[in-house]
Image (cartoon, rainbow, N blue to C red; front, side, top):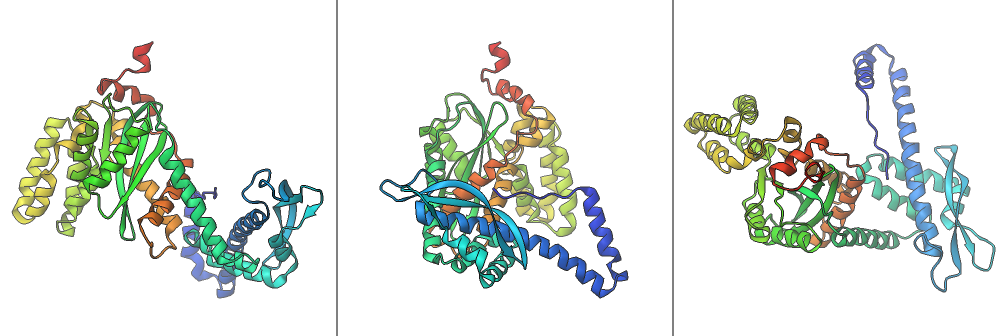
Length: 416
């Protein structure tokens, strides 16, 4: 799992100050500072690339990390500190070890190449530099693998195998029994539309529940996803809260597969975009603020304010007015349920999935053309599982018992 780097307000302020005053520095000083920072970043990226290449090289001898293939002669033997040259400097790394079952150390080909060949080291650094943008990390690994004598076809086969494994893991694992809310949204990947579902359990933990692929968010694709969730254990006899992007196909599929007794909250961010995309730029700020203020009111008063705004828009932007009125009641579901402000903020939109979609874009950014829907689904599954590892508890998770009570579900407080 790659590290995530964040910057404090003080660091951002310092960076801004540096850029504002860089004009008083000589060109040499400025370039020296830039070079030092770049070299540090490239070396770190290079270490990531080397680690991936060493693992692939060891796996070519033993298979995936385990006690050895049946009948194979080589087995993993832990890890040991080693060193390679990157950017003209000797850097320490943890390298995998391999031994024969009959006894004796086996050299890992990639490690021997990278520690002894200055030319190979320089090429790995170039590959790492190309992969400084995390979107091209996979390409950097492929390039470095070539340097270490691992063919591109082997790398491609490994990627297909690993992403297929992730997709199988995601679509076969059980759905948590205490899910109280489900968010559904899609992301376009090439010609495919990948629809993802993320569940929130009673304790506030977030879980990637599954995905489905198609060309659009049509009822068949949504139905396939919902039926999969039901088969894997999603409890639909008790009322759930669904948060969707507003697509009619999703709402109709929920009704068809799960029944009419569930609550549906329409994503407010999608609603704002649908309206503001149809009006003049000069009015966007006003309309956005108006809609957000109306959502803070009780349902009846808020809907009245929205209808008043629709009348204003109908004069010059009738399309925006129709978009505002369409499905308006569903955008007030969290208000009608009487949830506290902290839960309304967390459940009023599909931003949790939008954030996960950002991970998909980061990991698959170098793939310019998905060959088919299966490839898109495999990579989406890998990226979603990666995003899941970084999920935090839902903001306001301690108040989720209020959602359970509003849905008529038994809560821990009731049980006590």
